[in-house]
Length: 374
Image 1: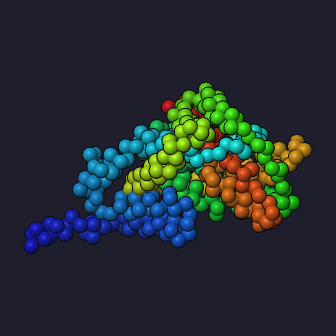
Image 2: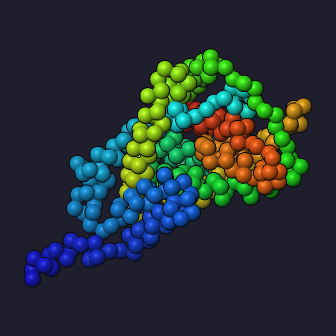
Image 3: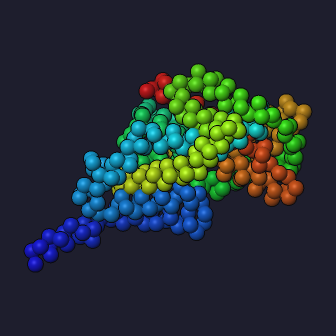
């Protein structure tokens, strides 16, 4: 009987607390959103599953949690702590990314840059809400809608907030189709939403090969702090465009990025325990994250409208919202909203220009912050 009682005291049922129940329900809700609503299932399902595991009472007590030195989860989480997983994800993203629309219409990079205003607005808001400058910089990157970059910067500047920041960034990335359309409709007229953009010019293979090389040199010189992320992004793209490394490109954009996505989602979820997550600080991070997405979306749309004041050939302002780094979800949202008003209007390729520019822009912004504060 004594051994039986001792066993019962080690079970999760005996040690359950209300915080664990709340977090397990939250994890199950993430899984529901991923499977039933198909909100970025590749992200939300492993994150939700990790949250469930990380909040089962007794896991950490028996030395199996993320913070338990020598545990499997602790070793897997090492890739998050040291920025390995975000860098590998950038390699896969580069191999998946087509920079054709940006090369064909370089002025679209301005829309990607405009959307990064969300980063610096969130940075200032974080300072006003009482976070220190290192924490504020890490939280600010959520405004770029870039999960890997958020994790990379938080691991360097505010590792104690990494779980909350990563969860907020990936949550709002998944909710891009919900958050963006009302803002886009509010800031544009029906006439603007119906603007048709001319077909992009043909881009030569040489241009596609030279672009990642030139882009790496320019951006890394501007922000050496993000050189690793940028190098992996443009290396992946060079593997794709060179025409002689198809095997490497295919591995980077399929098996590698899938494996790393599972590991980063699962371990970040497992890190998000009740004692870390159910705090006023985390609530403020989620509020700031929602505000930053709204600001970034609005900034891109408004800047497109400003550009139209000076352009003879008008830009559809809806593509400005794609300046956030959620690739290709934000570009698809531009297409979706545009086609509600004109079924024959195809904006997705044009929207990919600011979308991929946003990926580069958020990485550069992270490098600038890391260079100043790191």
